[in-house]
Image 1 (cartoon, rainbow, N blue to C red):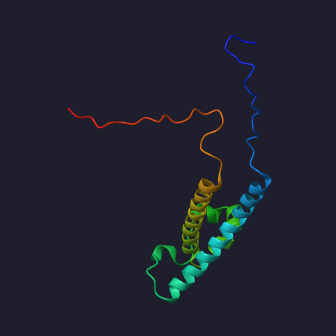
Image 2 (image 1 turned 90 degrees about the vertical axis):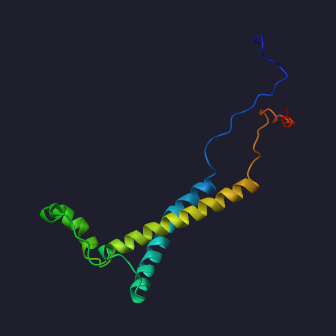
Image 3 (image 1 turned 90 degrees about the horizontal axis):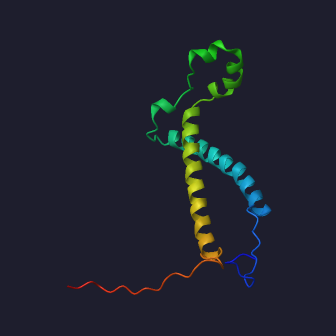
Length: 140
């Protein structure tokens, strides 16, 4: 026994820092579902915008152009050929990225609200209680 330790204190077992398996599964599904939804939404948004004459920047429309090194390298040309043959690819990519950021932000905000309402208390069993101090207004 040390000089300052007490035998009356409870031994607190450290909790594991790993998330529950269900949360890992949900996270894995979200990593697959959110990009798929955002790519589909981006594709449909560009098609709808082109049909209704939206002001989509002309730099995003048409077939993407690649640097000269891509055309000289057969390996890069083989990999990037599907991208180069897709009309309006840059517009699809830009709108898909915007949808991914939007969906991720909404899900994060909803998770934060739910965690705040349902989650564990702010203070643990070893935390000191907040001081209850009444402050008086200073008068001369």
